[in-house]
Length: 635
Image 1 (cartoon, rainbow, N blue to C red):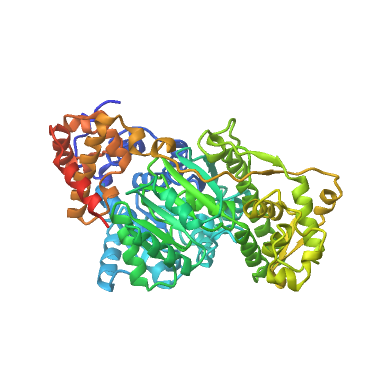
Image 2 (image 1 turned 180 degrees about the vertical axis):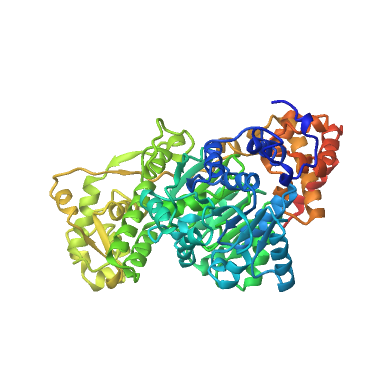
């Protein structure tokens, strides 16, 4: 890499044109965004947009989707229109773009009428490079009138999976976006998402009326994320053990219900952590305040339902925990993908048990969807359940679900790091299924296990189940072991729980050959919970930097936080952790050398270069000591 002395500083993106350089896209990437080269499919996507083609773009979170539409929107004449489903995402991206010297705006209901009219006036004068709007605004006469006289360079439809009724996050407002083709003829449209299976991809292209779109499907692999799955035994203790490996780090904990969100947030706050709740039942001002703290403060844990997360552009989320089972592989991938957006090591944990399986199957079966839809949802759930019980590399199977082949085990999931034991569970499975039959398929798992263990409970005595041949025949396993067998039999389809009969268990047709001894069954042995150290995790700053550079990195973070507070923006808007890491490694001693740091462009060099250079050239790092002390004093 070479210093960009010839570019100088303070270049506004609107000044870049084909006359300035033979490669205006690359020039923007380097001088404005501060990256030396394109990654993955970025170059190909941008070239298609510059050629005026529609495009369907699938890229995992953190792969740089935003650059795919921001750069061609800036190179082509006119204003780039970005359709985004969430107000928070608009505000966040606009703030970040303005830091780069790009004239970005958003139009939504948070702005007063005078401000909105001022933005529209500047739009019509050609003084806005990128405009963010919500899909529902474009469906109104007012929204269309605001853009009627505005020359557009490109239309980007973010989170495009929301248009798919077969996807995991369908939104009705997206269905009206097919009208963009007629409203703005000849303007290239780009649909972008991080998650869509083959069926959803076809539906996106069709419903948005994309014209013979160029299709780009990047690898779904997120190698920086470590995947862990564990049987739910004591969720509170399991969560606490996990969080001890992520002290002072930002993360998200997902729960199924609003009540559980609030209880979990209260428990974590009582343990001394900064944990905030987020769900649709909270007042709007509370949700907004908690989200703002999560974005702007370090080390905040957001405990939330899946109502939280889409469009959260926070790069330094170091972990995502699911205390309850998601509904599909797509949902799981989308939610866990919010970790590690900066490319640094991150970790996920999914806890699940039999009750999760039963509850979600009940939700699917009891929904008002038609049978075709229910069948698809059941298949998606079964795929996730099978993934949870894997005895081979999780990443290989996860990528295979999205049609991608990983040639070798990843070495960065719980199965690779701690290979699970399997055991011949044929006889115990036969005993459990027989006990379900002997108790006339009228009882749930707890009672069946009581019978197997020979427990003299009131219910056992009442129904005279102590006289059954299966009473007390399960001494080879404890209750935890039997619950593991039961869970896996339900997951594998040998047993099902009847929601109309208080989750009474009943065998399926698949259980018959197993009962008759015509097949054997090997199950996964649930491991004992182990406490992982930071070194065992293989992530975090300690692994990314030699010890001599850690103090400098802390000083750079402290400088960043001070500058962010002064500017009233989240710290990552100043620089990502990955940029500070590169800065700590390179230790530039001049402003020209600072331009070689990944993520440092001309505008940010002008604004922040001297501050960070002073930290690097300083012999001591008092800001780091103060920052560390402040973190230790946080409740």
